[in-house]
Image (cartoon, rainbow, N blue to C red; front, side, top):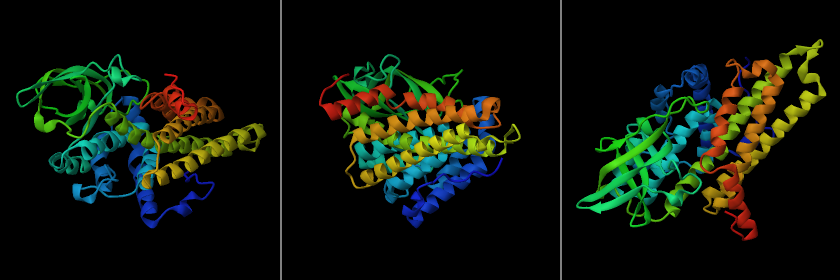
Length: 388
């Protein structure tokens, strides 16, 4: 297949700084050289490509918006968004790893942790010397995280943690888990280390989606968490929801990469697939599909660029992130399905990335807030009425 060509119909790259272009090109080259050749096999075998993580750390992408004093790159949110876009062109599983490590583990330690916690954990996480996961969702509480039943009890020197979390990316391989539990009825954040007695993280198998990603359950049975592992500035449900906003931002950018992968495959295929003595790209119906795909990709890029500007200026609203996540994932799924139509039977084979992206996107549409929940978040914002 012809080498991937960047999709940038409105020449948005002209708005990027030299540093942002360098970041994008470095990660794009990494995906082309290191991810694309192995990712289909990883997906088919349901194995996470763990060997790629040290190489990603060398690129400096983990926690890349955090200050350099913690071993991070100190880059802006536009650069971080571009990294997510390029990684998800490879696979949603890799982008999920980055998003969890950066947005759901490093961000809460930086935002809600003590300086001692920051200095202890952030450099390790930035270098992939430690891997983290984020425990909020429970078996019976997904869209309603406030109903969580995982509890922490104050004891001498720390806390006893009891409960379970479900659908946790990276859980089985994580060195630490950022766990949210109720302490006297108030949601608090804890750094739970993998060697703590009573803590286990069994992997969840037999998935049809995100097969090149590790998904786990977290189980806490009288887990003693030292006082020093409480995130001192985290209090109430607002704290974990702030973390989810960071992750949703990553998703909005990431799925644009999956769109690009599907569109590029469909475009190249349509130019070379001959039916009735000419390429199917020469037929009106196929061109209509390709133009619609390109249009939706361009819309998501424009949304993402403005979202990054708002985030970097400190003016962003969580409802704007919800709108971008909701729209972009929905359109990414539509593009994957249209691309599959263009490829016909070839679209279901592992020779092309389309069905893998389509399957992955089914999970992405659900996690970090379902399509319906984001609809109601935006609906409340524009009407003033809570419809939950």
